[in-house]
Length: 204
Ligand SMILES: N[C@@H](CCC(=O)N[C@@H](CS)C(=O)NCC(=O)O)C(=O)O
Image (cartoon, rainbow, N blue to C red):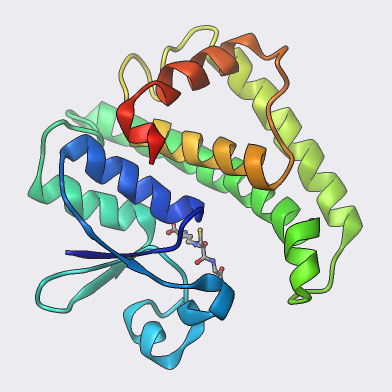
């Protein structure tokens, strides 16, 4: 199976970490975002939204969206389970993952597109007030996570799941590319990050 990837892109990283945890080998195909290869008519046939990651199966069928790809991988290699075992756990992990995608990733995304790196590409009109608001929302969300990690070892309870992968990729991207590293004073959040970061898959 091929994974369309671009070095440093946080969403393909989620899938690479997930596959590593499952010991699934994926053939990485470089989709050069700087050359806008993700927007070519040929690539849009694989991914109608023009985004990576995309998983291409041996027969040419394609799956986009990180979570959809991870679900496919979980269904072909069920262990270790990363999406939940019973009805409650499956739903709980989903809800935690959605909180992070909808409440944190989106805000990091606004800060990213309105920040200096994307600004220097001249692709979008910059809206400084939007960045100011999203920076502040990210900071508030980090504080919420810090409170949650005072009573929860992982994002969705007492074991490592796909929701930890979603959060790790978000925070690492925010820290390295958007200048939104969690403050050292957030001890519980930093404890969680150190713990997850020590897993071999996190080196990807
Ligand atoms: N919800 C999608 C987000 C994918 C996404 O935004 N990928 C970025 C790279 S990390 C991308 O392709 N951006 C290009 C664009 O938005 O045009 C997922 O989970 O896979």
